[in-house]
Image (cartoon, rainbow, N blue to C red):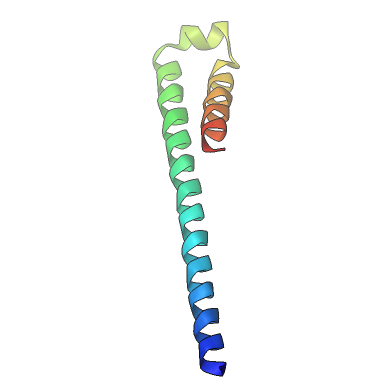
Length: 75
């Protein structure tokens, strides 16, 4: 009886660990995607400074929109 309990505990712990790693990997992948999007938007505004003068908060608004889009898609 004791061995089966230990085996169950090890398997449950292993399964929980795998789930935790999968969730963390998913979060990291989304962060990388958002960071890449932000850098692309930032580079675009550096290439066209006139856009930045018209709407200085535009890069932040675009990044917030992208973050909301990915957040809603993940839930």
